[in-house]
Image (tube, rainbow, N blue to C red; front, side, top):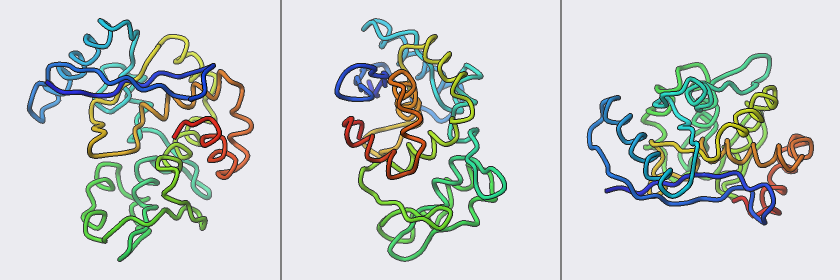
Length: 218
């Protein structure tokens, strides 16, 4: 058995995103077919608890929408071009002994995530992107902000995604090992849309961070 979170946009309560932990049967193995089995098992367990329809938001999603909304596929504005969100996140990390490794902006997303420097450079101390420094606290603020920026040109589409899906998952996300999660970030953006807060959130990172803190999203 395994346990993974299901993320639900909260449009009226004190939090922007609700998180429900769901137990399901885990299928071990690294193949794509095994990961699809785990997505199906998680969704079936969540549906039994009344959480659905669901969308898997990752490169392992059976739905093209879920794949397109993954951090490997989404593009973030960077100077006069765009780069994969995953590359922006990994390449902007600053460690005690190095970083940011901005050369990762120019590789594919999987290569960026697996770069050995991300594990060999000591403790993470913050982020640096486009000459601006970003703090580690709130914990997911920088990742959520990148995700929000990537989706900003497509908010009408994201609103339709929110109308068709109640909750969101990322089978690759293990809260015991990671903090940031693309499924959670999507639920967050949908909540901002429904609360009509996207204009405020887009003013600056500081405005975005303050909004997240005020709404206890992080």
